[in-house]
Every structure is written in C-alpha cells, then in structure tokens.
Length: 284
Image (cartoon, rainbow, N blue to C red):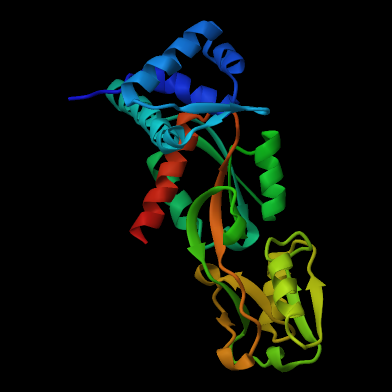
C-alpha cells in the first residue's frame, strides 16, 4: 500500500496557503530549508511539480491544485481520528459568510448537521453581499465565504452552477408594468451587472430599486406585486414564483455558487465544515 506522509502534506498545505516558503516555515516553526526539502520529497513521491513561481510568489501547479483540497481533508480527518480515539471533540472557531438570499433554507440544513456533529465548535455566521464577503475573506475577518458570481468569470471553488431567474408574486402582474420595477437587496448585489446588461439589450423602460441590504423588504415588495426581482432558482423563497416565459423578460446568465477560503492556515473545524458543505450538495 502506498501512503502519504502527513508531515509533508501539512507543509504543502501551509506553503499553498501562504504562497511563500519563508512564511510557511515561520508558521511551522522550522527552517525554510526544511520546508523546501519536504516539498521536494512530496514532489518525488507524487512524480510532479506542485508549485510554480511568479512575481506575486508561489502558486499551485496543476498537480498541486488537484492535491490541495484533498490534503486539507486528510489533515482534518487525521485530527478527527485523534479526537475520537482520545475521547475529545473537534474544537475551534469557524467564521462563515453567506449572501442574504442563501442564508435561509439553502445553508440551514448544512449548518444544522455540522453543529449537531460538532457541538464544541464555535460557528459564527455573517450575512452580506458577495462583494462584502469576498473582502472579509481577503482581510481575514472571515475563514470561509460562500459567494455568488457569474459562472463565466468565477474565481472561487465552484460548489454548483445555478440558473438566475426572474421572480415575482404568485399570480402577480408586476412584470407587465412600464417602467418595469426591479427590486434588488442592495446596490452591491452580485446580480446587478448581469441584470442591467440583460435589460439594456431589450427595448423596454425599467427602473432599479435598491433596498439597502434588507432582504425582507425586497421579498415584501416583490410579494406585494410592486416589483420583480432575480434569484438563483434553487433559492427562490416560498411565496414567490418564477416569472413565466410569456413575460418575455430577457434571459439571465448562469451563476456559480462558489467557496472562498482565507489565506491563513485552515483549522480542522473549517475543513470539516467544508466537507459538510460538499457532502450535502453531493447528496442533492
């Protein structure tokens, strides 16, 4: 049986997250030479190059990209096995960011299963626009974030691809109004640019209504048949319906639901939450 050395995998993961042998060595409390040697040994075992260098530092080569997530999962599983054997539960803190429209029925089953299985993990949830959540991951205030982005230019780890659809009140006729009133949660909404681009290709008057980040206000406006909005098809809330094709509203592009991870070393709790997310979506 061929086996992978967890020490080598740990060094690989930290180098990948920090994009620097020097910074990784500081995190691992070893010399830079030791880290470099461990990466070379892992490359020899796997028979390929794991990193390439550019002006911004080190980045993953194709083989490294294939290994990275699985290496994180393997390290987290190792910690879980130790916790089970020693009778101690998985601990730590995970700060997760989720867009407003995914914070309800979309993410709730995942978080419920995770909390039930890992009661001693301190899980916090932050809601915001995809742009705000992406910033949070970048500055380290969030460990993980699920964001929505146009599938054509997705930058995160793709969890799923979904249709972006027009929605309105059940049996409503707001889509017949001129100008067409479109209600979005906030001006930073990830769908805004795609919606405007689609509308500009159609000879029809429209106006945009922003609701200052309040999802419930948007749902109330649309549910009262005062406006239409856009939602990912898998996340259309109860009480609203997809606008029928007869409305002749412009077609919208597919969107990716993507996962972003902070550049800091991932905790076992964060990796376990990612595993729960993937497992839930795979079952769906």
